Length: 165
Image (cartoon, one colour):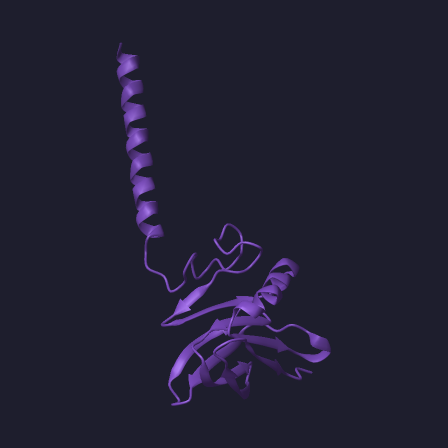
């Protein structure tokens, strides 16, 4: 009899702990994030709604973007998706080496910043409204700028190359 009461107390305590941990985990998962469809720390394509190896789509103001391409699946997915995004950027070094950690700033014709982020790989796809923009890309301490015109239909592309040797 006494043993049954002790077992019930242990089970009740275990259930209470499990519920407390579950609720705390759920509250943590619901914290706001700049990233749509994932978290800013998990940029993998695993389990995301984009499918096909495409990294998580992120949002900054009115601008959606995705970057990556370090792995083969992700690289192929980004290359295949280029035609569906108004602006496609590529970052390479000597021997067509892919570069990551490129700081990207996109400013509009009135010098208003519409995007400021760091690319997680050699490819970045950006959804922008049609218009004229300047893309500023910085790899380590070297800056480059390129003007781009995003058409109402179709895509614009810009490739950035750094001689890192």
